[in-house]
Length: 146
Length: 450
Image (cartoon, helix red, strand yellow):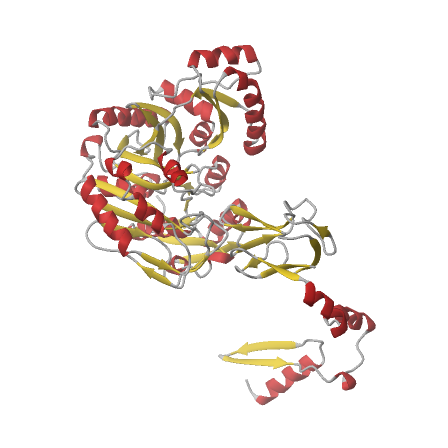
């Protein structure tokens, strides 16, 4: 991989909207990463992308009430999470839903056995942190209850 | 005659089959799910093919993916192992339709044995003793059913024709509960097995589970290789097995064994199979036949001195059995402990990374396992991570060796049922031999574990 080849790859990536690229050839491998630029010098993003970014970066003021009072519900064992009793059924719970102690929140399957994860107190579902079919470790946070 | 085998299974049995294939000089193709990609036995195969995601329904049970893997790898035969598609006659048919050898019986025989009523009829015709009760499904005539139940004598048990392995059964203590029990069992059968046919039998109170291993070739020969006692069960799952079944007369066993071999000849059975019986007060009652290799086959290998998987593959290749009934004898005694990744007290599954894996050894000790230190037990499949098999010249010697082996074995990082096995081999009734199928669950209840 000579210098011209590397330059052409940099040009190719610059011309695209790729954030990261890895290229291997003849035992050599090259990884190119686009470094996020400071906000003021960042080229204007399309409006749609900017909106999409906002929910994942909440303002500190919005976050505080959630993290201060929401309890994490963790997986009792290593397994596969299911948010609904079967593929065609509605989910056990949805975000914002009021729940009481004992409500089934999700199911963890391990080795053909299903373990219901239940709420240990009354409250409301603040966040669902896993998706159906996802492998979860013992102790991994599955949901938050407010 | 085939020169390559696709192993349509995973875990310890995939490794066991691979070993037999390699001894026979056969090329092995191992299929695996994404979750089993890093398993050591996958890397030992001549060829490894990923057939789908972790979930068994999308990989090990995906018939199209398996047939496609066989096609692209040039496999000439498929070994189904146990579980998954091993007793699926539709799959066996598709394998043969694709011009490959299915290492197992014909689809037609699998269908007869899969229907518990048809199986019972076939067994009665072959002179194999069955549980008292008609070898026909119940019809809707309740008066007739009541008179049949009265004739058998309460308690009776209702069973789904499509069930098996302990599923789809309901005990009825007296006539008052009969009508409701029929309705519920029929509905469960319809939902669980897509077959609402049910049948009625005498309920046995304290039976043992005894089974007979058979093998048949395509030249009309069938022999039985010995008996096994698998009475130590929890929720119909076998935990610890032994060969031969202790305390039963050689003559009685030989008579039953010969009936089983004769049934194989009458059915045109081929390959390995197991006739399962309940035994109460010395009498044998057929319950079902498993038309495949069984988890506990090694105890019979140890006592008969025969590599059952190798013999199974050879008869699938069209060879005649290399031994006759007169060549088969039972030498000494053998035990098998199923080592499961589960909590020994609560039985909650315990998948995860094995951080320490120390195995026992010495004369008469055998381990069949795909696991090792650093192996990650996936959460997607059953909890069996290995089998500890021990042989001795007498039952006492084998039991001594088993106690020492269990004490030597150490698995860390995950919970296993080793502590349960260590307790079982010191249980007075088990040491005497011949406990019933309820013994283990009774012991667990007494010590506060359900």
